[in-house]
Length: 493
Image (cartoon, rainbow, N blue to C red):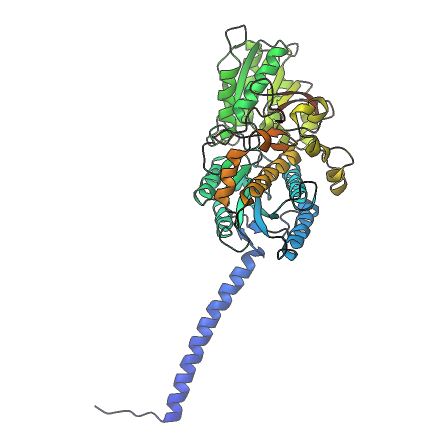
């Protein structure tokens, strides 16, 4: 065999050429990867996900999820910067406020409602860090977006879990969004990872008995019983339930079941027909279902219609009912707290149907004026006209109670953090979660939505439930404070 010998300079050229090609190939791969990653990045901690390329993830306020959130996110960002700057003198822990901030038409929350929640969350951070409740350790508040309908819940939850063992020490997640299957999965995963949770507006009764989890909102059972007690006091005797049967709508399912148990009593109060259902998950069908349902209601002639569905569906139902053939028949419709997610325009449209509409809310600024024994005066003051919240975020109506609920959720987490830090060098999520069980008697949370203590299952005890009336101008008029037992919890001495 003939042996071929290459000159040294040729070998060097071949080797160098091969190496250069390899470097270019690897470098090109890294370049493509960097370009792809950069294109998917919205900001620090926030990336584009899903078919709609939503910006989801966790921010300290540096990235603004929606234009209307810019003023409150700036407040949070500035307070976080102040906390970080003073960390050597005043240690801090991290709390996140999690919900859907990039809303689409299919979401039950409105932009107004989530903005109000975040404004209330900032108020609680301010009070704990440098206001009237100043305590240690301080709180760095993060804003976490799980995407429309919490479609990116797993990604955002995983990002939050990573922060648990970081130098920022995430110990609690608040907010958590409405009662849906996705948000329930979020709660379960956070619980498994030892992070404390305080839900602000989650009311479904079957979300309970979860480690490290409490809610400041009344449950659907509480709302249904509070509504029932009010209706009976007002001499209503007959009712029918209209309920969304969509799979995964835990809010509607538990609300309807609870009212079925609460209203009939063998003393003249009865349901005059089986529960009438529609299915909002069936596109192009549920609106027709509500339309045809009005004929049955004319035949049954109930005094009250208990609507167990989302606020967005309520407006369609009221439109259908206003065009009923039995115009002389008067109806009163009473719904649950999701009505507060309607925008001002939607509430005004509902009011124009000229049907008497009541609903049980989560909170209302007028609760303190009529029931001062059921609401903390110092907390309620912040929500009064002309006070801090009004000055920071002017021209914002507070009737939906969402700012109050966001505030009370973060306030509860802050109190748990303060209690867990007593005599301890390090605060953990599990320690904060255990403190929720000690928030009774003198340790109750002095909330703007009522005085709050917790049962072992995580539900609030005898939580105040405001009954509200929709007025002709589309505003929520406070009627009275009710409760599942008829009387809300009061301040413990």
